[in-house]
Image 1: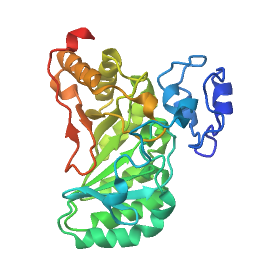
Image 2: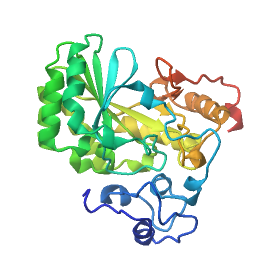
Image 3: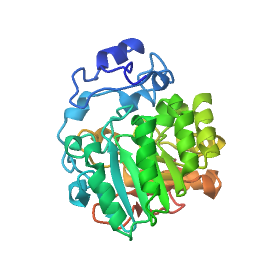
Image 4: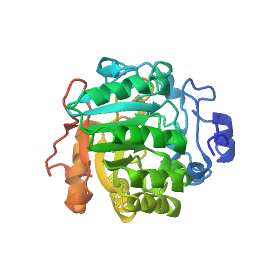
Length: 322
C-alpha cells in the first residue's frame, strides 16, 4: 500500500476528479496519500477536509514572517542523533524518517532526517539505558509503524528491557491511514511488553474514521494499548464546533480518548492552516458547553523551552458568538 500510494499532485487531482486550481504540481514537500485514506475523500469536492490535509497548494511557497523551518527549536533538544529531550522524565526517539501520508501542515516537513535515522539507535538506546531519570520513551518520526514488524519488535523489546522505562508511547497515523498495518505480529509484540504502552493516533476530522479504523483500534486495545488522540486545529478542516464535536464523539465511539488539540506550529509553508488563538479559545468554550468533560481535549501550543505543552485557557464568554 505504501508503494502504491498516490505520489504526485496530478495523480491526486485526477483520481478525485478535481481541477488544478491553486494546487502546486511541483511541491518541494512531496505528495504521499495511501489508498485507504484516499478512499475517504469525496471526489469533486475541493473543500473536503481530508483533501485539504494532503493537497499541496501554491500558498505553501509564500514566505511569511514568523514562520520558520524549525518552529519548535528541535535542533537544540537533541541529546544524540535521533534522540530528542524537551521535557523531564521522557525522551523522543526518531524511529524512522518515513510517513505513510504527507500532511501539508507537518511540523517536521523540514527536519534533517538524513542525520537522525535508525542507524543511530544503538547510541540513543545506550543513552536512554544510562539515564535513570527517564521513565517514558516516545517513538516518533516519521511514523514508527512504517518500520516492519521485526524491526519494531527488536526496538520495543530493547526498550522494554531497560528497568527504569515504565511507559513506551508510540505516535502514529498508520492505524488511520492504513488500518491494515495493525498486524497480528505487531499485536503479539505489544502483548509481550512489561512497560505500559500508550498509542497516540492522529485524527483531525471524523471523516477519517470508518469500520476499518474501528477494527484496528479494537485490536490495539485488546493487546493492552491505551489509545489517545492528538489533533491539530486547522483552518478549513476542523475549525468549527460541529466538526470538533463530531471528531471527539467519533473517536470515543471507536475506543480512543481525545487528548490534545494542538494549535498549528508556525512552520514554513503552513501559514494557511493557522487559526487565531482567540477563535480557538472560543471554540473550546463552545465544545465544553456541548460535550461531557472527558470528551474535550486540552487545547495547547508547544513553545520552545517550555517544560511541557502550554495550555490555552478559555472562558465561557465568547462561545455564544460561534
